[in-house]
Image 1 (cartoon, one colour):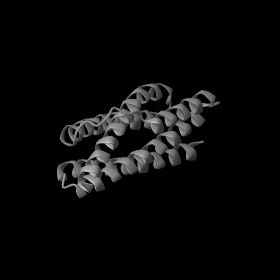
Image 2: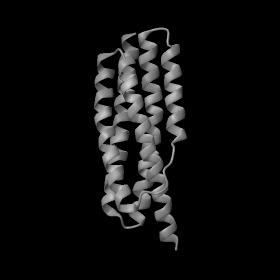
Image 3: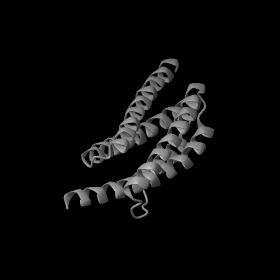
Length: 159
């Protein structure tokens, strides 16, 4: 019984994460146009490519676990709104770029937690392929976060 309930929880979580990946895809294109620092633009392009891989992994996981009910992702929708406001209110390119990094890191922390949780839960269910995919996503999100920290430090040292 607990296995069935856990599998249902995983299906719901994956559905919410898939909705979040759709929010992220929409936001990435918009943010890329606002970023000015060349290294930030490159990092955002790389992040967009990684996000597509995450979306594909989520699709595979959902096919194996079950689609679950369609969900919204109010967490990433709120992060998108914060990012939009930061970008609109920035008074210079450096502040805007640093705001993009800060809000992006908040999203990366969401993804680190979400993928890490799914890796743990799917591993418990014996869904080893999904658990490996979710662990890979967790590691990639952590690496992207570290890269953004370094980029913020670089931008700050130039200003």
